[in-house]
Image (cartoon, rainbow, N blue to C red; front, side, top):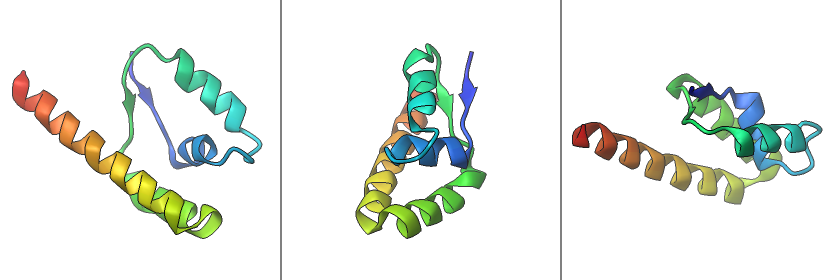
Length: 79
């Protein structure tokens, strides 16, 4: 079964000082299926990372998101 992530959970995953970081990390580690990140939350998450964690965190997220997008497109083409 897929897990649908929201911006708050994804932010908590990136910010080790967030109160929910360990809980979210535990859920992600136990998730056997794919984690779906709706496109609608990308702008909000980009903003949260940049404002609260700085440009470096934002750039890392952007690179990871781009690679995930390429992977998902490649996977869709392969089926």
